[in-house]
Amino acid sequence: MILAAGSASRYGSNKALAYLEDKPLLERVWDQLPVKNKTIITGAYHEELSAFCNHKGYVYAFNKNHGEGISSSRMMAIELALSRKQKLLLTLADLPWVTPTDYEGLIKCHLLTQKSVFSRFNTDEGTINAPPVLFSAQDLHLLAQNTDMHAPISSLVDYAAYPNPNAAKDIDTRQDLKGG
Image (tube, rainbow, N blue to C red; front, top):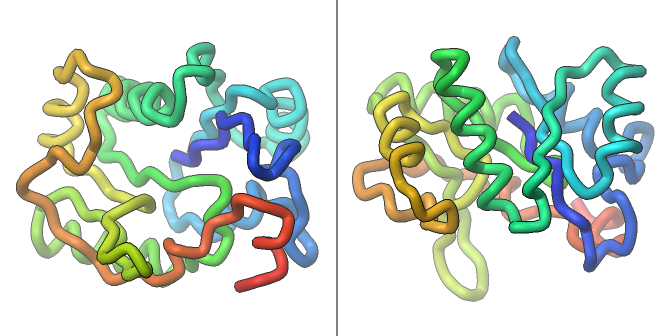
């Protein structure tokens, strides 16, 4: 699932439809995600994104609680995955430099460990575990039972980490579109 429900306040407009080279960010992430059952979680820019998704034939779902932050979109993705009896590969529409090979590495790591797998990268602040993340079925159930929607996914204690420096390159501002 691709989360694209945020207001993009630092960007100043709908960044999911901002172009990087020849494609909107959302299309680039969709194309690079090597799974069959993909869904985009929309929110703040639902009208624009749903029109785009309808034109492209993409599956999407509207998060009516998008104003509560990314945790509400994460919870919606978890509930959708559970209802479909699927594991959850969760990514963000503003991660255009994560490659199919990066996603495949997460999947292989999960298959080897049978654990949820976070992308891991280093920053000036230290080591970060972040999306893209592949949640195991067991962890999806644990996260869905947590009544605190804002509980961090990092509260999972038994997970694996996959080195993914491309996950550090997200788009927050228009300037970010120039670096890769």
